[in-house]
Image 1 (cartoon, rainbow, N blue to C red):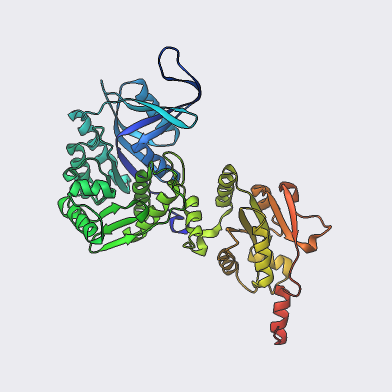
Image 2 (image 1 turned 30 degrees about the vertical axis):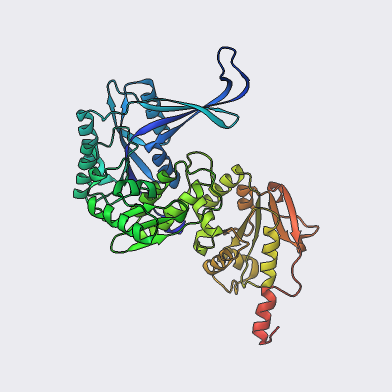
Length: 477
């Protein structure tokens, strides 16, 4: 994603951290001891939950994350700390409070159906000394952070003292605070940059039934005034996001299929924070957050989103620029790894594509029809000169790449400078390698790394060489 090419923000997340614990199994009988199912557990998984899901989304987007929160002096607390450490999160801001239970929510899943959940946690407000430690740590690290997130799950960490202390310190440092609020009284978040309530939460907090643009505007204004916000925001599920600073704007979204809205709010605040701390305006960050949430609701369970997935989603809406489809070798390697993990078939072809013509377009359309994703390797200017002579290319590599990337059949373009794409094909290891029909009976560079080789016949009389000849002769088709 070109808009985030050099972005690597550092974001501080303060909130209710927990562990989501899953016991997976099958059920084939009822217990003889009581009329309950007997679940034969076959596997066990744990993921970060609560504010931890915000952290997971930030890591997935490519941010550096440091955390502030409270855990107990218990086994679950140590497990949570190790989970944060394993994904590279700076956990120096975790406060251990004696006697407090670290939140862990265990779910028993039988044949993909949740049949029971049991929780171990403390929900009362954290101790005063813990409040002071969180705010003190935040003050120590704020200069190295780009933005602060308060992720309130109502488990006692985001008290009035914590929220007020963090927001005041952030303002002094000139840093924005974004809040995912909880409850009906939002006054403890006064002075934040924005809150991210959904429509139901905003209605409960303001007492305004939101059922049209007029009531939406009224609720946004009420939140802005009562909480002294720089920008007021309400998320509207499938209707997108509405914001109000000097005026009201709505940013619609399109989720192709909605499987599970779990964690969508975490994705919204994470992606908003990532975009704002990377230099985007709120009017640029809101659509980005919309698209991130649209990707996540198409997955099962609390999920994360990557920049590549948002790229692909925007491409499916025809809202992405050509730049977004031009990738480096490292970027394409990461994309291919994800595509293969998702079971997608990868098609690769290559060429100079100097003066784009109908033969090129039909060739690429047929290549794309062989799989799910088409990657085009494009010869750099130096590579074209080595192949075609000193008068070529006619169009610079940046222009050729941009035009190719604009074609509906092309998913990604990646440049290579060697005379052949041998190394690139080796790295991608495509499912299908496509070459022109003139390779019939000839050895094809890199074919050993592909599962299948397919040849596509060219359109007679259509070539860059022929086009250049006609231009030089002053003739027409």
